[in-house]
Image (cartoon, rainbow, N blue to C red; front, side, top):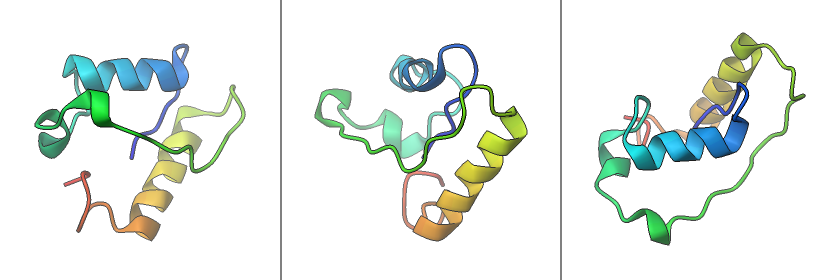
Length: 73
């Protein structure tokens, strides 16, 4: 899971993950990024408030149980 907001949006979020910046989970950093696939679960307006984006991310994390069973540990 990952909330993509700000000027660089989704691409910026992915670059941060593969660069090892903040927000990368322990398990994600152990995996080979060239084998990754991802899906966009929900689109929000480009000018959506950061708080709204983070809230929607939390909603998806809860719905998909990514804290208990996924990479959001």
